[in-house]
Image (tube, rainbow, N blue to C red; front, side, top):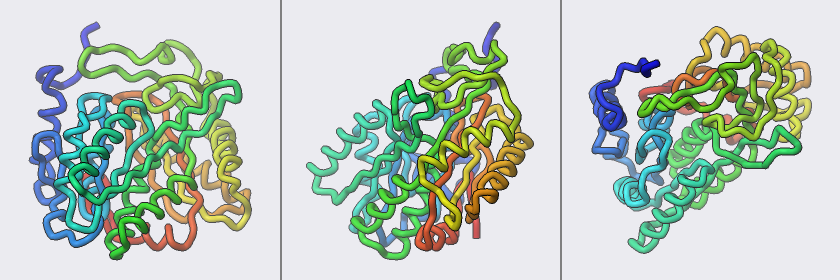
Length: 332
């Protein structure tokens, strides 16, 4: 069956999408080719925050460019890291004399692009630091521990940006980002497959079964465990237990909880999942200090969700409770 998507041409999807983003949010971002730039960058006198990654995961990551979050994102093609030169250009553009923090999700293509971009930046004399997020935990004891970067990076964007806005040095901002990255954990639960919007290819055969896969990775790369579909409460009990064990959460701890829809999961389901997660943690004496629920980092129309939990302290809570204004997420 012919792919049913409202596009003009497969080869121009990302270009047209970025033009649309700039037209839709002209008060928040500027779009220059495949660079999405915060309007707030113009007057920035601080450490700046840059990231990069493929399109196809909307609203991430371009949707989180703006005041109090990302300063610049370099955008690649569908599910593909941008070239290193574009990432370097993003860092060069973002540099305001106080240093640039480059945030990278742990995938082979992103790691390679980041490594080469960092070399270009250092050769150019830029003051840059890189922090890699890879918070996916190993769910299958017999599988690989891939430590893939998932949606938890989005909360880190605001934590790092808030630290920069306090006037902290690049080393201080990078230390906070590293500490946050080490204190969060995520698992993906996949229920149906996505399709590639340029060729209609399906990512797997899960949609033809009555199974779900726990630990499936961002794009459904696999490496998880396939089990029969379960209720929200049963699924949360399995996933949240694994995350709590990984983070060594105990009674009296405070946590951030994210339920991220993968693209085809309804808000109704996400809110039920969040309710069950809060109740699960409350039973263990863990307070949910803050949360994000919704489509944050999707994979087209994939069914399922990512659960991200982070162990928070007073500093993380203070930094989170600061304003931000982006196309996809804003708070006073």
